[in-house]
Length: 166
Length: 189
Image 1: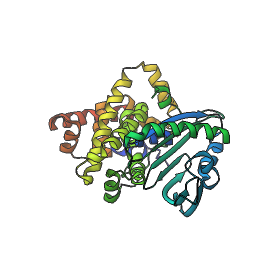
Image 2 (image 1 turned 180 degrees about the vertical axis):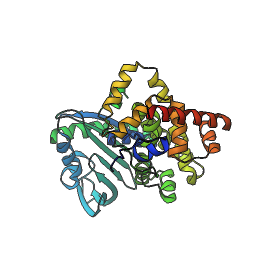
Image 3 (image 1 turned 90 degrees about the horizontal axis):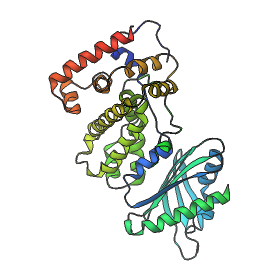
């Protein structure tokens, strides 16, 4: 938008053009979101890799999720429309585990995955050259807060496995 | 969470060109689903509120805006399930954002002025007018910035703004007069 040359003489008029504005990065937004999810465990780390490299691993569900999540043996994308994805995931013993549906919102630096059994979130932002801050939560409203320590442990395993894929 | 982590790499948008409500206002269905713990709906509500909260907090708290915005959204997400009337979301969020923005701005104001100005410079609201408005606003106390935002940006009535800031209507009237006068003088200086 072009800025007029003449002087503005009221905050109302000035405000038509330029009220100061701020934004939060995906990690900050996800920290805020997590405040509304008392059943999830959350943790964050800094990965020694560019943001693009990290996010290429995170968003390739079919290829990498089974290598990160021990509870997942296979992933299949069912639908994809813009940021919205529906995917199906099976456990590590495919013949014994049913497909589980996940509703997903995915964009660079931001991923939410919701199923009947659990909630997962991942967010990332560049943190200096060759480094990426990575935030991750997992939990299950169905099983409640009692199992949070298990999810916290699992998140640390996820960090280790993601590092191994970078 | 370490303060240095909370304040790194924060993006600030170009100055807003449009005073109309920003973002996509969450629908009642989204709000209700989010209140029941639907993760995807919670993300939608957060996405919908972010641009608007960012402008409220940015305009009142200036360089402390990111901290105020994050604190606002943390409170909103934490307490959303307890909001009795989902249709009242906007007013509820505005009140939290205004309070947090004033609180963070007051706290930042007590920090050394030099740091404050240097950080304002780094806000990078260039080109031209955005930085000028931010600089003029920076010379007003946070409570005057808040009343300008509520009346001139949000379009609240004096009674509504008084309720929002928890002050008497007469106080709003005089504070607004002083704020507009101070803004005009500095703007045209």
